[in-house]
Image (cartoon, rainbow, N blue to C red; front, side, top):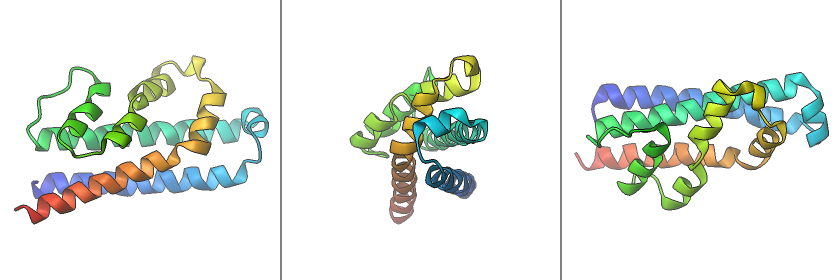
Length: 148
């Protein structure tokens, strides 16, 4: 892995840490789905930071695809299967990330159709997927450095 790509990935992982930290703090402050859905500050922050997390994960995945010389995916959602096929991320993580690009597209392009219940469920139950992605990508970088 080139030094520049590694640095870009580390910068994005740092950003991902910040977004994830903000989401975890937000999650602690919310007492119920009803409270979440009724307070624009809660759902607005959750939507934005989840959008940033999704985009950052996609960006990191594309950097890995480029660096590894993998054929460019036709659609953003394919990037996860490409890095899974190369054993860069686990099959279990791939299955959990499947649909992340679609979720991001809804947050960005179909914001009038956002289901707050789904955003709440992602906030409550799926932040660990983001953490696992971060750990697996860092593990990949570490192993690629050993193989030099």
